[in-house]
Length: 119
Image (cartoon, rainbow, N blue to C red; front, side, top):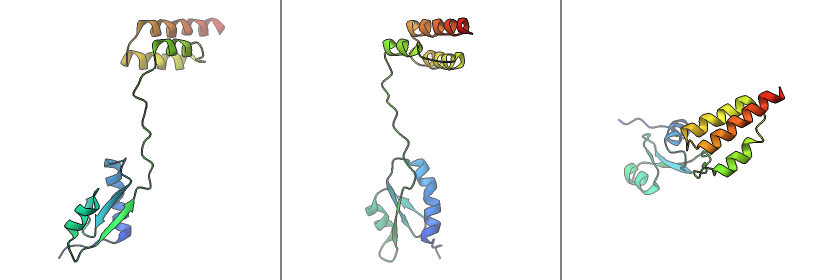
């Protein structure tokens, strides 16, 4: 005999499904604890005697980051507004792992010198 799960048990199990599919707005669960992104597939699996429960994603999907990186000119302008040496060093790490532009790195190094002179 197949084990049958309650709606609350299925909602708990759905959390793991939403971690794997964070952009899904809902999943369809059958009472034997199978999850589907498509309602039709869930109904086919459940058959005539089975039940399908729609579970809404209560977690927000991660915000999409803008994949377009900033221009060197924008980063050089922003470098002048960074307030701490630690923040500039973090920006240097991001730049070296990313586009590694010498002009941007020079602006960051110049900002570090300015901040050291102010102290």
